[in-house]
Image (tube, rainbow, N blue to C red):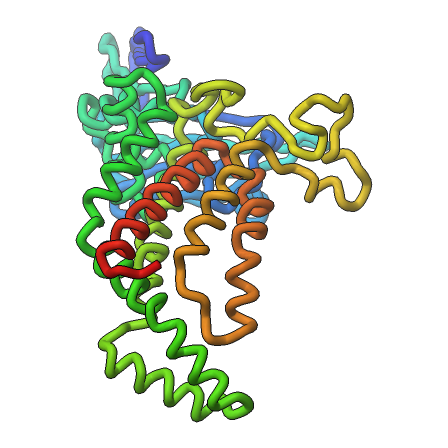
Length: 396
């Protein structure tokens, strides 16, 4: 066993008889009763493996209950079970053909889940010794550890033991960048702030054009109001007049959505990093934030702990009475940014946009606070950038 809980097991059989003996190397991992899972569709917990041409396999405990047995035949494989932060995985030392399977059984009230494989039969002549070596990883899914085993042991896609998601090509590099900055500054929260700033710099040309378009839209507000008053009651002519104004002024009203669209994959990638990596577990920021992967522990509805009761325990509405200090700051920063954005010509859309900061405040209150910190900082940087662009375009 090494210091990261990789066990190397060697089984040997000595034939002391007078006739050849046939044996088949066999290994299994068994779990009794389904363990508690997060129940989150963003994270896979259950059976996992890469089985040669069959590729990556991810089966939930529910799927195993339904199918009972899921067999595979492969020339190379690793397979086992994964939880949110830990895993137990078998990795045969040989690349010889093997038969593997995931299975579920019931022994009375006890449910068992099994990942196993059996390799080709070996024939051991009299007086000879045969054997097989397998490896068992049973430990924390630290990114550096999993990546090192993938390379050192040549395990195909072993890094997928960590559920990076469909946006893995964004999620994993983002973690690598955050982790690198963490090693420089010593704080994951500060690393997230730096990454946000770097992303703003990288997307500055595109965002700058978008904010310039938004600034022109804000400058056209008086003319747009005149059109709404002139064609009040006739939505078709009002829309035609608006489109003609956009063409004449060379303004694209959709361009203002680009900054938000750019943020969406980054937002989900950062959420994934905070949610699945054990490195982020219990990682502190500053002040009251001692775990970036958990929700903000404060709550405005008990005056941030001054009142000795738990608002979330209130019947019926308790689930909505969870808003911490960082979600409040995030909502305020989004409100500030919204005030710099041109109002929609449609009163309904304008009303929805006005309520967006409130909706986001309550929606993100239960999200990892690291994500809320990112969103708050991103809003502030966006607002500053918008102010600069508006001043350049002489918009007040």
